[in-house]
Image (tube, rainbow over all chains, first blue to last red; front, side, top):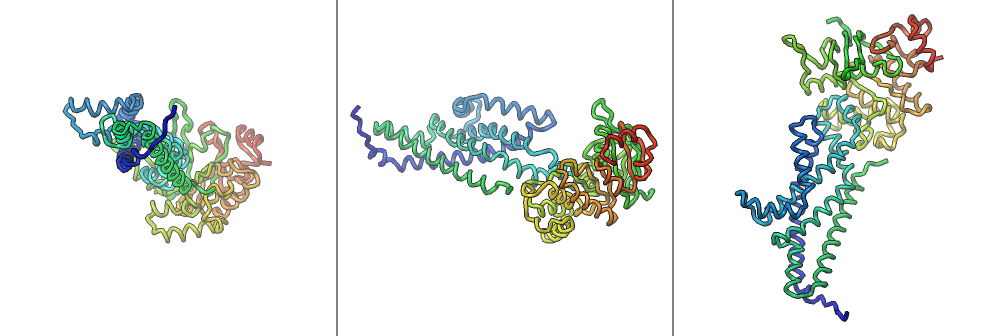
Length: 220
Length: 256
């Protein structure tokens, strides 16, 4: 082949990649934070005895989970303005990822809620706690511990999904990498460096979540 | 006011089409220790769970200290009381469960403290002191900072009893509290219950421990197919059963 790797062009633009990474993290953080709230509300909706709450939650989860995220990103950015809803690139992507993560996290949280034994809720009732006290002191803390292992893999995949923002020219890591690729023609080097940044970030995220899991684990 | 601690009148409970309680009447005075025995499916646990509204019931009434539990009737319609009101009424009774049901993410002391802080509105240090007192009473002073997963079944059940008793209930409900325990752990739990009975705690126990029911109860109720089949003092009940069903039940049970 005779190809010699030469990273110097990529290093010159490394700051740009780091700025992109920072934006990726920012997008993921805001979207997932909103998604967690949305997911939690939806999870309670999915488990509600009232159809008025359960059906909308189920419809939301079904639609979002069965649509490719790239389609959602493009729809929100290109189609919604036609309907009179005009969002900036970043707002549009954050809204999409928040909706998307809400649907996925709803299923994760639902599983975690179901895994809390009914007997514990009864024990709470028996000492005179109200439903909301039981939810806050017993159900939620246990649900969180139940979901942490699967939550971390969901969070990591949601972080990686920020790369789809490149499709609507949000200057996050993948977009910046593509720009450097086009400007320098250092295709292999650029994508190697970008991949390394993703791997490193995800590894750090995974380690942080594992540590949280350990700290919250119940002594036995 | 009749002066009874507990007064159950014509209690009916249905699960769909199946009627599990077909008109149960029962009164209980302060300090009574009543054991409810009977084969599985006879409705004994269901009756206990109606008393603190863990089960809804469709007919009849339950009163504790004269106060109607769970439902109110106005203008001829029977309505479930508000959730807050029911929560307050539930705190009048304490309950220990077959499966202990300790909160796994809290230490023994925190399990006992939760109700004291959230329901009774105690300060944490007060609640802590009271929790330690009761854990000491059930012989677990040294284990107060252990988590349920670090305790044996018998120890967990004693914590669960301490958690209920610390709330200072008027009446304790015990739902087959030794059924999930290894045989060698049964006695430590029964001893705690005996001590409470001696201190004058009013209690209603669903149990399969016939020897224990015989020793500890002031009265025994035999449930049969959703009704009270027979009741009386333990001596008469166990030695001279009046009905054939009870005689048969006692033959197949572990009392001898």
